[in-house]
Amino acid sequence: MKNFEVLTEALAYIEQNLEEEFTQQDVANACYVSLSGLQKLFRYAVHFSVGEYISKRRLTHAARLLCSTERSVTEIALQFQYHSPEVFARAFSRLWGVNPSVFRSSRRFTDLYPRLLLNQTGGTDMPNQRFDISELYDFLGSRRDCYIICFDTVRLMETNDTYGREAGDLLIRTSLERIEQEQGENMLLVRVGGDEYALVTDIRQPQEAEQLMQRVLAHNGEPVHFRQGLELPLSLRGGLTKFEGGCMNTASCLTRSSIPSISPADNRAKCRQNIGADPDGKGAQAVVSV
Image 1 (cartoon, rainbow, N blue to C red):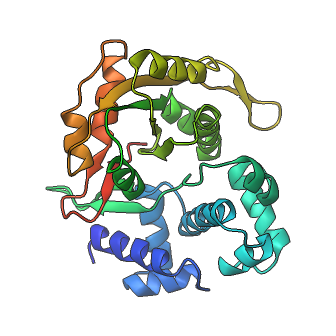
Image 2: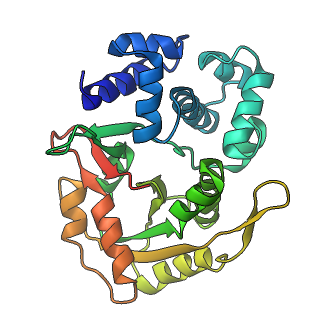
């Protein structure tokens, strides 16, 4: 199998079996490759091991169930193949920074690690990665004449290179927490790329959207505690784009939007570039650029 086919098969197998018991070797067997070969491919293309990707997807789904159902923590833990609530709570806390009970009572954003989708690029066997942002696509279908605020984490790749992806993951999570603090009841927060996020608001006035954006950016420079006394500086960039509605797919909606002059042009362009539509009409996707 080519790399694209192997990764596509592996991601599909994982997604279909998140609530089932399986091993990393089972994933490799489904793709007809060795586990060591699959691990190398995942680390090169996805930047996680197979096991890490499985865990992040399960805990992302678990977070959604915590916020959308009244099922017990134990029930959710067992559903995603954690054999005790204690093991589940430790894994959940490592990813989300809080235990499941605190998360359920205080958080709304749950899609920290969206499903990865792949597009094959011409002339290369290594595919482009995209996040599945079908939720954003569906949400925009009910919106018109509102502002989308786009954010990205400053120097995330530099943090990954210097301190490792654990540090980068912490900055991503904290970036989303800062945005979530300003998220209104009728707004949708989506991670649209490796270090890019979109907040779909119900705001119609550019000044009000600008004020919300600036409340998030007011935390720029505040350090994030990593480990062993290491403090990581965290700043975001922000930009606005007006969504006018009336379009059938996300890409054309944002391309045809009117853009107010109060926002940084580079970040608006990045937002429009990273929110796109599935060419097969199966759901919106976003480019992963980290």
